[in-house]
Amino acid sequence: MQRAIVHLDLDSFFVSCERLNNSSLQGIPIIIGGGERSVVASCSYEARYFGVRSAMPLKMAMRLCPQAKVIKGDMQLYSNLSHTVTDILTESAPVVEKASIDEFYMDLSGMDKFFSLKQWTKELASLVEKQTGLPLSYALSINKTVSKIATTQAKPSGFMHLDQHEVQPFLNPLSIRQIPNVGQVTYDTLSRIGIRDIKTLSLMPMQILHQLLGKPGIDIWQKANGIDPSLVEPYKQKKSISKEHTFETDSMDISLVKALLLGMVEQLCFELRTQQWLTSCVSVKIRYSNFDTHTKQAKVAYSSQDHNLTTTVWQLFDQLYNRRIRLRLVGIQFSCLVRGTYQMDLFENTPQLTNLYTAMDNIKKRFGQNALARCSGANLKNKTK
Image 1 (cartoon, rainbow, N blue to C red):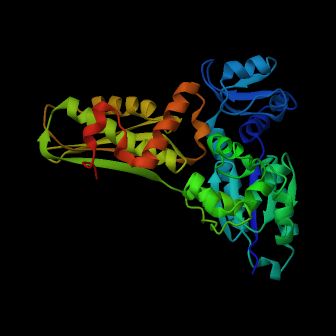
Image 2: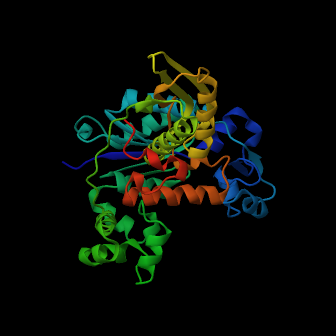
Image 3: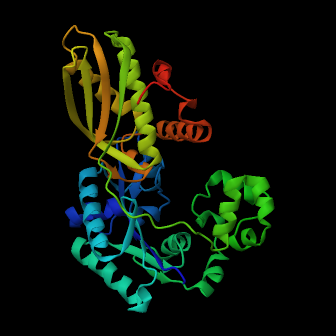
């Protein structure tokens, strides 16, 4: 049985949300970002015409498009509208995966026995647009990779339907940059040996790509040939993540406690970024040696970055620890999570800070989570539970 996978992407999602709130923003260049030293989190198609792109330094974006209107962004608004779209899709489709705040996959395999999948998908997309007012693009094809690439080609506000025999002719002329997870480094490596389009890549022996790129080379070759066995993972709302540390010997060494809290924040934030979550609620728990337990929480701007959340954690701890009694346990919880890509954290970041976190995460993914840590939090290794 041929699989039927739909990829649905909300066009310029942050910008579209802002335009729902303010109709005067229609048709003009819009940039979503933070202060002058931050980077572009999202931009309208009108701004893209001038060369503005996500993750570009805001100063550079304003030089390219000085007439653009800059909006700081409202993560609560974006999250609420994303939840609305999620509810519509999960009520209609049998299997829905929420890949990010504005991106979804649906597995419709087998439903073609009962009705036209093309028509069903069109009606569902129309329902989303009618109930939310958000523009979208979508594609229906044989797997997640092909559907995602097809959606990109259909943007903005477009639709594509590709059967098995249409997949390779569609992929062949496209740049290898269209393949998910092919970044600049991989592109440069393949480009040096003359591989720039998907057809050339698909005809290369898989063993050569494996030698050149390692295991990712096999994955890229398969995708270039329209092969992707990955499943659509049913959407589940994650409530919170947490970590606790119980002292072997009760302690009132504040420097040690804060170092442990820092290490826990680093580990939890790495987990957030790896799984593409952001938190807006931070809780700290302490337990004294007499087993009295106290917690305190604070709302924060959506984030998944250590430096932002560590400051809040330390402030909460200072407010909680007001008795000169030894501590038995400390813990942290991040809750009120929303799904989203890493770029949602760009509102307050400089390009240098964004690149630093990306580099740190890549090192941890390659060598293990404990391969890199701030000095004051390094002694947390293998101690938290």
